[in-house]
Image (cartoon, rainbow, N blue to C red; front, side, top):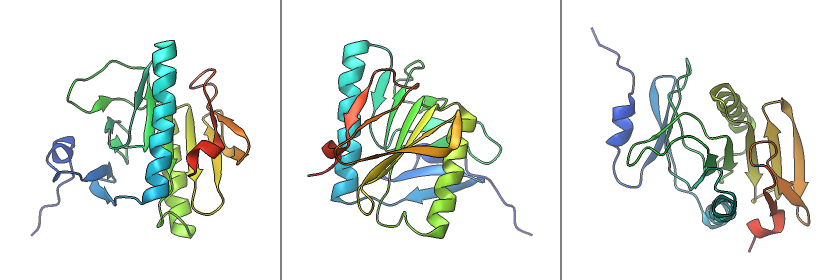
Length: 183
């Protein structure tokens, strides 16, 4: 007889160095490192959010690989590629609760029917956890930012090169040129 155990937050703290994972359906879901363009895009989003944080002092910009602890039936953690958080700092521990804004930057393997279903499920989890806006950032194929809002989660606003994207109402007044995501 085998005993089935579910992954815990403590398991996330003991991953090997430079590993990124989330707990989904009781299992650790490891995330692969990304390539140049997606990595640069998440860095640009974080840098822009950091500037907004310094200007407004209304929350905290957080880069890739920060863990957010959530309490959903199917998910215990989120780890966006960039985020804005308005809760209390947690020192060296994972953040309690979801960010108000999350950016998910597509990597090479984030395309196709299964990837679309997985990304839609993750957006639903973000919204169920309290996130107000989720960016689906595609710098590899369509070169767009799809802005999903909790108030209308199935109909994104789409921003293309030459346009200015926003994250209302999560990050009031913050904008970013889509062109800044590219070399």
